[in-house]
Length: 267
Image 1: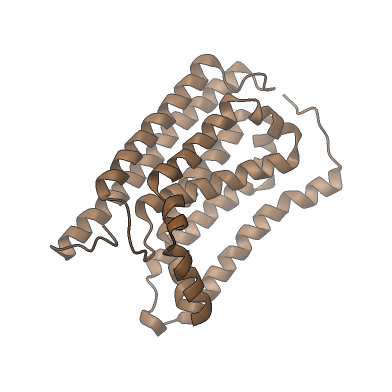
Image 2: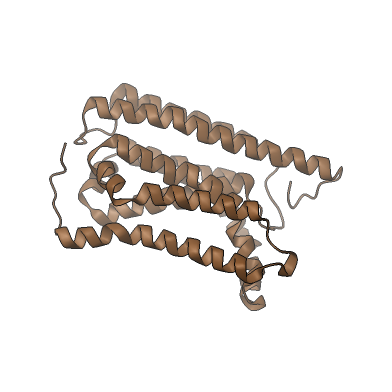
């Protein structure tokens, strides 16, 4: 079903490319920084670079204008975007450790500011798995179970805010699980595992609820589109969370193998 609101064609055509250009710019800055530090300061693990570029590629796919238009007209397209932006891309971006890279490359004065932020109490609160879970999964419940989704179809600025929230909240939750940046303290491993499984259950429940009761209500999408979108959320969301669980347990196992007395600052 076509959306009833039509924007200025030229302005729309131009604005469609802006998010994609921003993402490509971030990738260029990341690669430039990797080349800049070269073998200095301990070098850089190239697997991190590969991982970050995979995450960037997923964002680019999600932001291609063709997919953007499909997502605006069909909930299945929107769900593909949601999965790429909020679940798959954050996993690979976090493994790319962009903050660690910035700490290596930026001037000492700036690095100290970033380090101070990472060590602050408010960052600990914000990046705690419980807080990140509420922002991430809570945002999904708010979007799909309230009129917010329909509102986002008619207000372009709200549409972009939703995508930014997907990315930031998804990144934050993933970072709370497997972030590699140096911080003075982290929630215990069992806390992270518990919140990950709560997240898996909450995500699965939301997709089943949408399938059964055809949420979001009053949207221009057909019942068939809504149910197909809910199935995409259920199955592909499960796969994403399974990958996250594998990485989390893999890092924990590796850490235990390296040291019999792990530091509480990392695990």
